[in-house]
Length: 125
Image 1: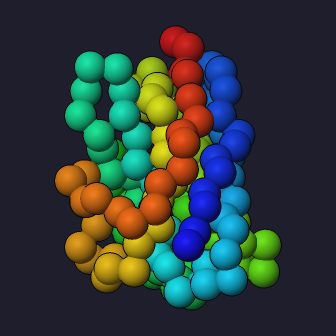
Image 2: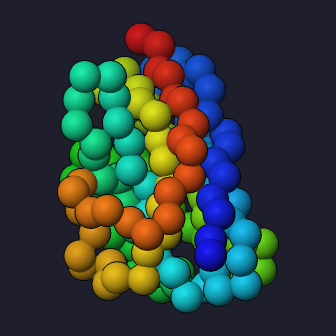
């Protein structure tokens, strides 16, 4: 069983940065690939990125590549999403998720085994 709790969301001006955190419970944290998804009002859920259990591989959506960076600290059971050069297009509820499936399988329609409750990110223009 893995429980996920996101933090770090808030209001930021366009061009600014935020760092989201996702803290996990459970002793098997390092086995799981951890990912971020986001959903804006009236839009479908969008895959943001996934990081493998060891942290050795990270896959990003094209929309965030070069601006967002995922990392994880298995000693702290936490995964991070550093978001730079934010624009209004990044406004959404960001949720982290955990699953054992291969990182290549991750995408917008993936139903992960565990989900956090989400944290709101609002970018003002």
